[in-house]
Image (cartoon, rainbow, N blue to C red; front, side, top):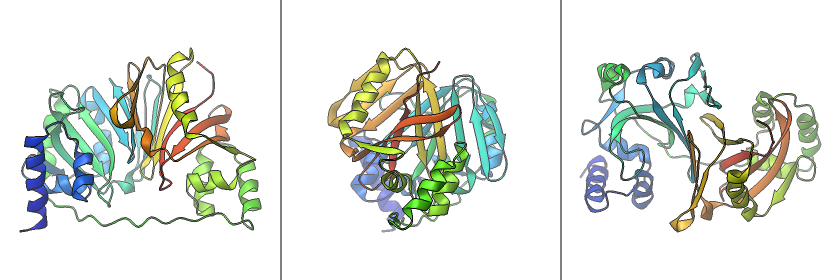
Length: 324
């Protein structure tokens, strides 16, 4: 039997037996990617979109109210938007709103975009959903339609296709900063003047964020106990000033500043932090390293807490600045 049919049948059986099982949990059980699961459903509730990423981004205002979710393996940042401003070209897109949202998207990482009906959270009704995958089948972004009657969703139906993606396996590459290279890295860090320069610094020195943080320890970063990040999440609800939460991966960055109101610690180490327009979720069992880091921000030097899993993937970051 073709592998695609095997995955599809496993998905259908799981949906019948455990309707609250999320797609990412099923992917882990099957040893495949979420992209492979959705690709197995092509023509059976899922369609490819024959639109360039730039064209799709420019259609967002026609989709009405939306819930935009950016994901890493162990965390998610979900912003609910009534409207947003957009600036895009063929490679980059920026989204921002009056609700303190700021997103920078790297469009070349958008390998496959599909349209389907999904539940924003288990137990909720299905709504139209756009899912963006990289070439490894990993979810970069999900966009749920909170007003399905908006004209943009009907328009998207005209661009649906059955083109099947061909995902590849990801090989993680790590590069530790040697003692000989450390002085040059510190000099580059001291020379930073704006947030955009940090991505160039990482690219120039061929380092991931966690590797750069380790290399500048004692100068611009400090290792902290993992419990410190959980305490910071809980403490965000007690702050009188908004907290800026950030989720950053290879496909871009999702920042949202909000006054959080609820902190919930659920079963299986699931943490959830909520405000009126923002929801932050985290698997605290995956926390492996936490760093307090100083680097240039929009208003000068900024201090943040950054959490990483055992593979060195950044999970979430919290801005510690006190401002309104």
